[in-house]
Image 1 (tube, rainbow, N blue to C red):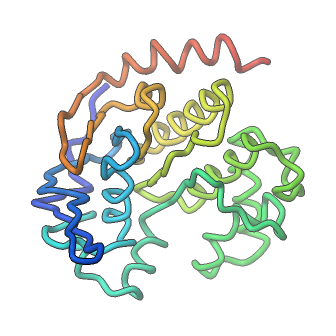
Image 2: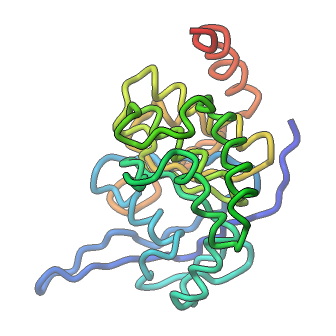
Length: 252
């Protein structure tokens, strides 16, 4: 399968240093990285490796000590909070380990939240949200609240919410961290299929090598440094993991 070569994320000489008392802790040390449109990219590392800090930098949640982060040719590190908020609403979706669903809202209301900020009428946004819940296998749960759903179902709602605005980039922070093995496979399958259908870019941060199996670029990070970058064939992922899932689990 031919992949677009357009770079959507370009990181150059990125460094992040925290001060703890009189000590300096280097969380990221001169990171250089390019992520292309349509790539499913996994940042793989143990706790304290710097992977979450890197994701926070890309999302604009933290400012770098040095270096540049260009997303769609826009310098994230130079944006103020107002510009960042607008940029995220337009271009970026988020998937969280802890789901981050609003407990008082139903599944369809949670999924439709990003569309509110676009000024979309209620009927239209609920129609679109229902379509995305159907895509993740939860059409019969649209009126359920988070406490009425399992962890895997809540994460599916989180995936639908991340994709509902059709963002070019999805940032996923340990998306399978609270899930069992079978549910983790289901979640990764859904994310992979949805991103491939619209040539969307996913950046996943995880400590789990099993999650990295679904990526076509795996960035191994340790102690704030990139140790290696592994490029994998997209069709290989399809043959080894996506098709076997469909054959084994899809009709359970």
